[in-house]
Image (cartoon, rainbow, N blue to C red; front, side, top):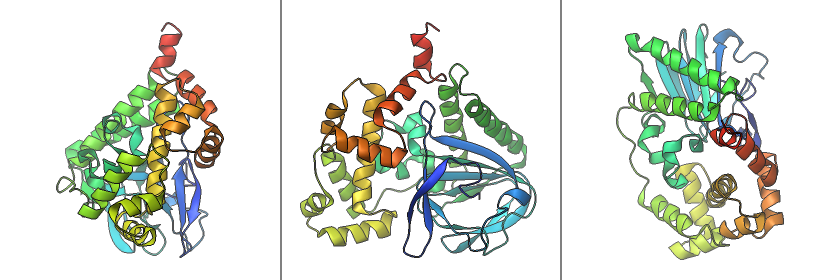
Length: 318
C-alpha cells in the first residue's frame, strides 16, 4: 500500500472526525484517471509521520512482486506476500504503520477511478461497485494470489500500462492505457472468490432515485422525502452502508455526467448545467473547479485536443 504522496496524483478532499485524511484523485485532462507506480518497499513510506493513516475516494490495486509484510485495512490486519494482489476500495482506511508494512522487495500500485474503464461507461456510476470487473473490490474479497507461472505476465501488463501513461503524446496512448487497465481488472477479477453481489435493497432504492432525478435540481432532502425517510436518517444509513453520505452520491453522479457532456458534446455550459441539475453555468464552474482543480472549458479543451487521444489524431488527419 502506498501513500498518496508517493507518486499518485491525489489531493486532500476532507478530514474525517477521527482525523483520517481522505484523498481524491486529480485527473489529468486528456488521459484516463489512472496512475501506476512501481516502488521498492524500503522507500515506499519514507518520511511519513509515525501515525500515518489515510483513505482515498478512488480505487487502489496493489501487486506484490517480491517481499512480505502486512498492512491494516479498516483496522483489520492483511498479510502481504509475493504474488498477491490487494484491492483497496474508496473510503477504506489504510494504516501502514500499526503493523509490519512490506519490509523488503518490490510492488506495483495502480490508482484509478472507475470511469477510466470503457466497459463501465454504459453502467450507472451508482452500480459500479457491483460490476464483475471490480469483483476483487467487493466485500469479502479484497485480495487474491497469482499463480507462479502467471506472475511475469502480471509484471509485463503493469509495465505496459505504466509505459502508455508515461508517454501521453504517443498516438492512441489513452486508448491503449484504457485497454491495459481493462485487461488488468479482468485478471484481478478472476482471482476473486466470487462475483460481487448487488447492493442491499435500501441502497438500491436510493441509487435508483438518484439515477432518475439527478438531472433535475433535486436536493438530498428531495430524494429522502421521495423514499419516505428524513434526510438525516437516510444520510446516516447510506454513509454506514456505502462510505458516503447521500449528498456526495448525488454530487458525484452529476459531476460524472458533466464530464461526459463536456467530452462528448459541444453544449455550452448553461446547457450542461441545466442537464445535470445544477443551478447555472457559474455554479457549475465553481463546483467543477473545486472538485477537479480546473475550469470546465479548460478540461474540455484538454480532453478534445490531448496529444494522446485518437480524436486529436483524426483532427490532425492522422
